[in-house]
Figure 1 (tube, rainbow over the protein chains, first blue to last red):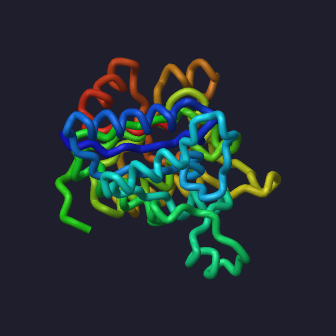
Figure 2: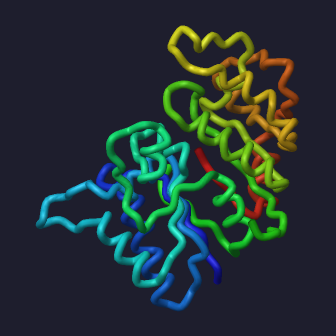
Length: 130
Length: 123
């Protein structure tokens, strides 16, 4: 089965992004395909490069980054949702004249068309959050 | 972008217009899906009914008028707008913005919308 995943909840604030993480991991371990993980609304916070949970807690941010590297996953963060919430990669930071960027490089910034395309090309889209 | 097969997308909107980003961000998704020529329907239910009122003045709270943005949906090919009749009744809403071509549906009709959709997004 080809899945795409829509993550709408912020880490820690809600369980939804951790559930999404576990689902993606379980799907890949049972030989399903993850076409794309799309981060939208508060879900964009999962792509933070600087969030630092206490050391005795599970680091979901690192978890996503490791998962992306291990399986070469397509992680897309909504560019408009991210910019309005203060999450920018290097080129966006430059474009908006900001001193710093704060987005992990395992995530690509792009538009909602990527979610629409993922919907069209996947058997199922599973939403986490809302 | 690859040439995708057309899916039937249902966007279920259940949030009031200005209390969160849901109304705006679901509208953005609807516009994107319309742009990519997908079959999109929107169902307004619960407090989302308030998005459909005429004469909104969100300038007072420094917000964009979402109701005006809803009106551009048909230009993007999103023409199937539905509202849950019971939600309107519960809120004593009798008049919707007449510029919006929106169809009132019963509970069983909205159930059909869910059944006909291949993908449902809720906001």
